[in-house]
Image (cartoon, rainbow, N blue to C red):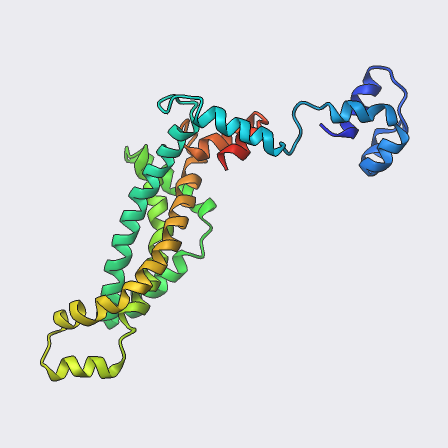
Length: 252
């Protein structure tokens, strides 16, 4: 509630407010309304549930839902964080493994480079908000629910940075290094294990940092359209349904 809401309540209670027309009040700034109706200022400051909670309210909610509550309680933020983290880690593992395998295939196969890589790029142009409900509905229709749909969405978001980073890393050795291995009659497998893979490690770890963040976003987004009762996404959704802004900010 803001000062416009306070004045609306005062008007319903029979108090004369300025201006009397609600449309005019909505068009005015809060400062002008406060100047014209100084009696409403104390009621405005006394609001119990502001739209944007104060930092001390968020800190108090965090303390109450983490330290002062059992971890096993379904009202504990740590419990919900573990539910989301589980889907994040599973999806991150799947996405990382898939990304590395695709990158190896793209580097060693011209056909995969020309066919798979463009589709991998196109897949990331689809908004995850639009794609997540379709993934969940399709998996639910075949009897798959719970952790798996969220992990699939996390894997979908995390595999692309790994593919791009690993492809660049596996192609990073220069021609002289590759020619040296050919001079020693090294096989393609030996060239991969002794040169390409070690050279790709910096790129891999850089892409993993991006992938884990994308995986967390995917897990939270995956909880929103499912009506989940556990997870950080579920806490955010419940807070928005019931107007609990403190709960939303503490979950964030």
